[in-house]
Image (cartoon, rainbow, N blue to C red):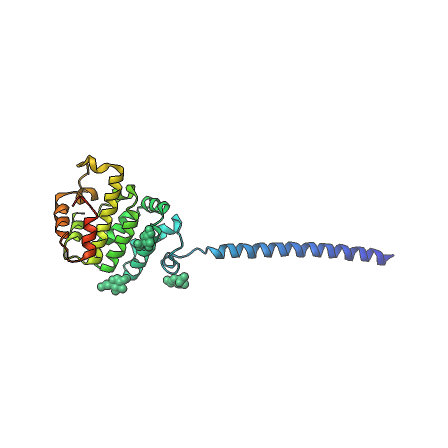
Length: 224
Ligand SMILES: *[C@@H]1O[C@H](CO)[C@@H](O)[C@H](O)[C@H]1NC(C)=O
Ligand SMILES: *[C@@H]1O[C@H](CO)[C@@H](O)[C@H](O)[C@H]1NC(C)=O
Ligand SMILES: *[C@@H]1O[C@H](CO)[C@@H](O)[C@H](O)[C@H]1NC(C)=O
């Protein structure tokens, strides 16, 4: 008799144990699943963002980290990598807006003044990708020394890129019909520099540049 009650308790105990096991199973499985989910998108440090998979599309928080890194480091290797990553991300129109809103145009633009040619190039690449957005163009304030990049003796790699920037801007303004409204460009803006007399002179000289790629770019901006 007592035996039957004992069996009952044992059975109840088994049910409880099974329940507990199931709960523990659910908990650990949930945790493992959660861990895997976090593992897919680990929170990466700013420097990590600059290496490996450049084709990852970064979110606003990651772009901010990257811009902060760019502002705070003097290491040319890190600056260059950060600019490449930003440039690749700037190929996406949503990111063009985010980077502008984070103040990124000025941060990237300031690297054009970097004496390191390799960094200058990457900054211009990034700016070129950012410049297909009209509102971004307005934010590019690069100063009058920017025009010195249009001199004939400037390295071809740089020349081709500044001409591409000019071309992007020219195409956008034409599409908007804003070139007809000239001369409405505010002094100090990139537009004012690019459509001013000094730049026109430089462009006319570049038509005779010895490098075919440079020549071709110049003639693709039809005004000159
Ligand atoms: C990126 O570089 C960091 C060191 O800066 C390193 O710890 C990390 O493992 C690297 N990541 C990849 C994906 O190469
Ligand atoms: C220029 O930057 C490149 C790329 O980061 C770097 O490897 C090189 O050492 C730098 N050159 C100078 C003169 O600092
Ligand atoms: C700029 O965008 C193009 C695609 O539009 C992409 O191929 C390129 O890698 C991007 N980055 C740079 C640095 O040019």
